[in-house]
Image 1 (cartoon, rainbow, N blue to C red):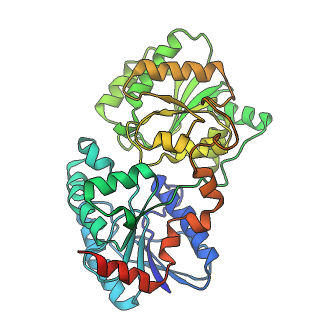
Image 2: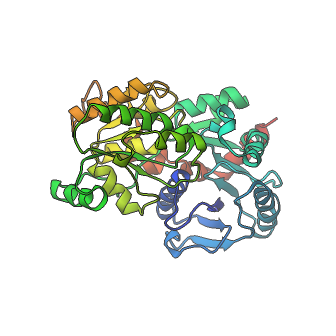
Image 3: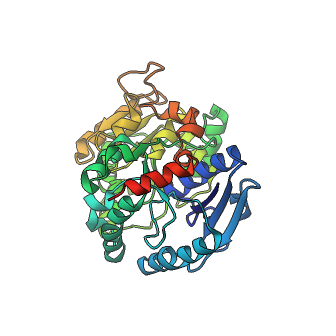
Length: 388
């Protein structure tokens, strides 16, 4: 089988959540299935580290698709041109974007529909593109994958896609995320926080990540806490809005907040494993990979009690109301009072790591979204013919 894959988010040292998902998924799929040929479609010069096996053929197709007009040019002009030349049997898109101008059967991974629920958080051009095109992508796909039951129901309800055409395939975490020795943790803390204990937030500084309420809650926690515990923010300031800036500048204890910016993968794993707890109180998530990464490091988790996060965390995390600063402050105080201990209500082996995500990770070759791309070609065509 010849499988074309959208790999435009495979950028060295710049992997975001979906980029990391794409990288880890494709590494496993391509190495596990040498009988198939994979056409990796990049929109710029690629890094050799992303060519995971000999059955990969990398292809660069301009333009660099980082704006809605360039999305249209790449997906509706460049890719159809390539498909006509290369004759792939299937197109796999790990970021959910598809070409509407091709008859090649397509499988899309739609991680979440945050832009449907919080459109004002996204710039006008991108918002307009997403709201117009993603319903079409969902209908175009012969099969959809998503990363949680919450997202599956969201796609089903908003886009009217039959549930039997949507597969839930939980995310996994990189093997970089693992527990560290006490000595190594001390080294990491000296490097990033001057040796101080810290809570950590990981992710892009986007409004829906709820940094405004996290800053307020941490500031209130520090009002009654004489310790030197810090709050580490690990992520790029891509969406540093006025509201986030004002919340930060209004903190009485803002000197206790450390911004690392984007860090390399190994540093990120070390930071996660050395933290007192992950503070991940987003307003909306389709999955929330940092939750799973923290569990892999045996780092306690504070997260939100809405959207997909309870599904991912199970009973192993301390759940807070993301809209209630006092609820978040209480969770932070609990994490400080119980350093190194899981914060959920139960800690039995069957529930410790939340949901079925850890079990799914152990079975990743069968559970991963790319497994959909390796089904028989005639099944893909049968799905395509069943579409209205």
